[in-house]
Length: 107
Length: 119
Image (cartoon, rainbow over all chains, first blue to last red; front, side, top):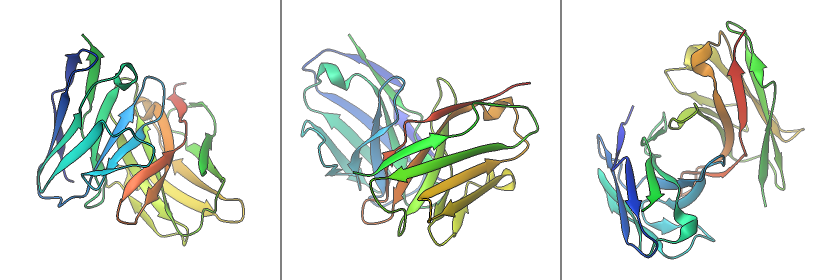
């Protein structure tokens, strides 16, 4: 299994802040990395696929970068609706695996 | 657009079999992989496995001995069975389309259904 590690596990930020979440794979996964947003009591929602491609309908303040083992999700200007938990997920091989999540909270 | 809806018993006794179905609406189930993913309360996401509409499956090795997936294209639905459940299998279970094009992502997801294992 490919282990995915996110950092930080949680962060506090203010509306308008630039937020960066990091995801590291234990081995190279090329660009097979996806990011999801999960709000309390809801199913995860796809934000970014293939490391840097923005899913249709997702605001452009979300962006992703990276390849190989190190990846980043950036929210350029945090909005009130962005407070949620974010997960990375590798799709390089099965079993598919997720990071442990990063909870973005209001400062 | 495609929508997914999980259904099944919310309470299962220990050592019994958990059975869930995911109904796909707004599009055909054919030509895609379909996955099951679970999330214990307050914890992260675990991929259980997936099934293609031909019936081919991939299971998480950690659960493989207890999991069976099936698909019914005539009803546009797919199913999960997990045997010999314990309290550790208590979780919200999601179904999702497993897109195997350049994105290789889970989209969309069902709303999730809580399954509690308790006597």
